[in-house]
Length: 239
Ligand code: HEC
Image (cartoon, rainbow, N blue to C red; front, side, top):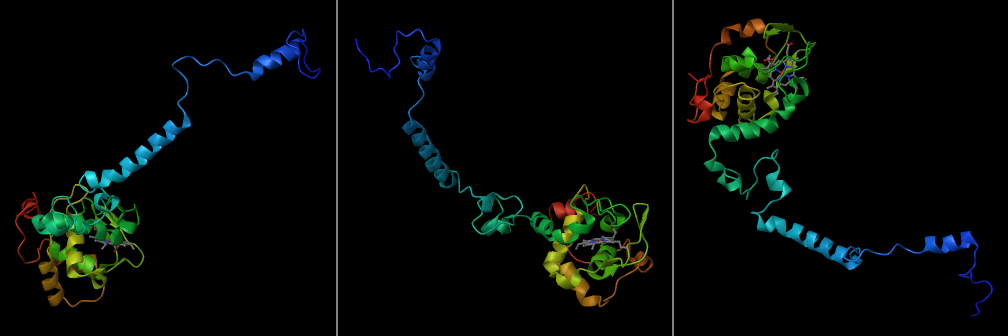
């Protein structure tokens, strides 16, 4: 047997060379445990992609548009009461849903939790201003409030007070936000309707902020108007 002189001689007793040869070899595969060929991997990736695409059409139209819990029902929304079926949803649920997005205007100060910020923005959660007479509440939010106010036994006096939000909101949006703050974070009080807001706006022509003292006479008075039957009218605070 003759090999080219550069080829390592297997019979050589040079240990390093022998070991190097052994290290180069891959380990023997365990029969039955060989890795799957690459094409199998690609095949299943393809199956996953195709199946994912089918998920929408085959599960009643799942899509992030429709199933986004924060978006207002769009046309074609298959959920009960959504989209075209909105008429089927009771007026209170509809108002709460829309009011939740309208509340974004207020949340920067009164916070998503309704707790406000200590020493600056008073809480809406559990506030007697929110839960009490709607004649006072609507005036605060329509025209604003300035000077020292007491909410849940705490005094607040934010420089400049709160500006009114009435001018920038339709009667419907306005009513929904008020209904929302009266029925969130544990609050429960009868809803305020668009018709109530329209009537109030027709009668009350004030344009400047109120003070706590000026609103005292309104604190137990409620806006006139019908409240649609349903949870908006039958909550514990409804009379
Ligand atoms: C720029 C911050 C700010 C925004 C935005 C804001 N408020 Fe206020 N809000 C205040 C402050 C400050 C007071 C207390 C005013 C004072 O000190 O005289 C207040 C008071 C109130 C009160 C009476 C006190 C209480 O806590 O119950 C109500 C009700 C209220 N706001 C509702 C709303 C609603 C509804 C919105 C959204 C449409 C809103 N606010 C948006 C700052 C804000």
